[in-house]
Image 1 (cartoon, helix red, strand yellow):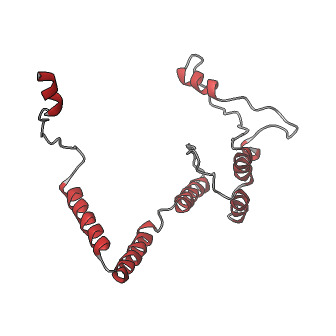
Image 2 (image 1 turned 30 degrees about the vertical axis):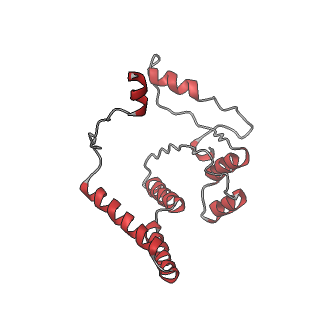
Image 3 (image 1 turned 90 degrees about the vertical axis):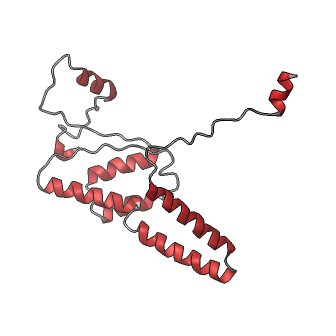
Length: 176
C-alpha cells in the first residue's frame, strides 16, 4: 500500500530557486520586455503586425551592421596589413568551423581575394583549402632555435610535416 501511494501521490519537491551567477536584474527586465513585445505582436491586427515586423527587421539590420563575418575578416586583414607595413611579426591562428564553407561559392571568393590584392601566397593557400578542404603551406626555416629537450619543440614537431623541396629554389619568406 505504501508503494502504491508513493506513485499516486508524488513527494513534494524542493521549491528552492537557484540563483544563476551571470543572471542580473537588467537581463530579467530585458526578458520581460521581449515577452511583452512578443505578446503584442501576436495579438496585434495583421496590418499592425506587418508594420512591427518591418520595424524589427530594420532595427536588426542596424544592429548587425559591421557585425558580419565579412566585416570581421576585413578588420582582420586591415590590422594584419597595418602591422606588416610597420614590419611587425604577425601570427594568425584560425579555427575551422564545421560547415562554415559549405554554402560559399568558392570561385567568387578567389576572385574577391584577387580584387582586394591579397598576396599570391595567401590566395594559393586559401585556393588550396577551398579546392580540397585542406591547407598546405611551405614554411621557411626559422633562424631561432629551441632547447633540444624542450616539450614545446616536441609538441610542435609532432604536428608539423617537413615541406618537400621542389625546383623553386631555397624556401625563403618571400616565396612562401
